[in-house]
Image 1 (tube, rainbow, N blue to C red):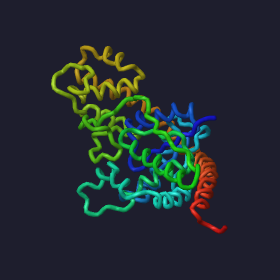
Image 2 (cartoon, helix red, strand yellow):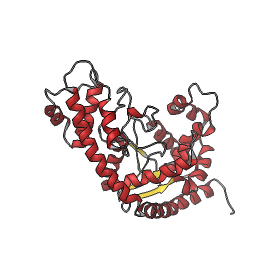
Image 3 (spheres, rainbow, N blue to C red):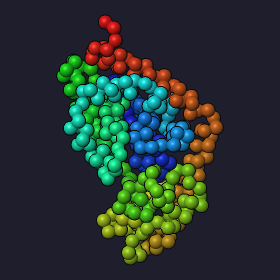
Image 4 (cartoon, one colour):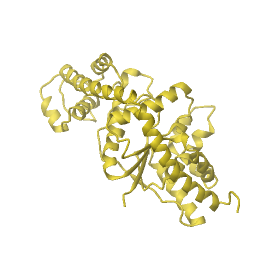
Length: 328
């Protein structure tokens, strides 16, 4: 029996080449091995203030970009979190089976709330909503990086606690550590990963950037002391980042890339990195425009919503009866 995998990417900013390498490329591999539930976690996005119109737009855009990148709208179940009310309903039940101490230890909460006077309750409780996202579909696997693994562990703890009290109800999910892929760093601060919510727009290459913007950002990317081009993340993080980008988007190994740039100067490296990015993103943007004008996004989301609702309703109905809700 094919294992079930659940994953999602928040529509809280414009997608970057880092999101493509670290997220979308992984999904292209997963869809060959798993039954993939790929959702847009718009409910998670409002743990920090969002402009409603922008959020509406980004939800559609992120799905369109998935499809343009080659994610199958037929092989995968793609849906919007807020369109399935069982996410919030199950989250409440799970909140009542969770502990304050567990949530207060979440490192993401500590990091995002640090120094803030007014902190929304959702920022504290959203790991339980994340657990509901997972347990609602009895997902076997959840891809996770180091920053989110703690949340998958919480989902496991809640599932085990609930199962011990009411009998076998939820599949206890396993964290799936993605295959080591390219880590794309911030162009201006290569000690940090590239972010879709960065305030410095020169720091990230967005999937919808114009050719002019791509070239300008790459040419202004931070490099390192010296003038030799070789891969050394510890001592030459800026150059190493550019080599990584070239390797990914030229579809060469890192070894082949280093050999290609042996004896080159920084300016030569930047020009060629910009060239491969322009070629890739121009092609991607053409596919994206075709997807967005075709009506495919709504067809995929309708199909994914209907399938996910059926499973979510079955799980929630079982859970609500176990805890004593409804008429006997």
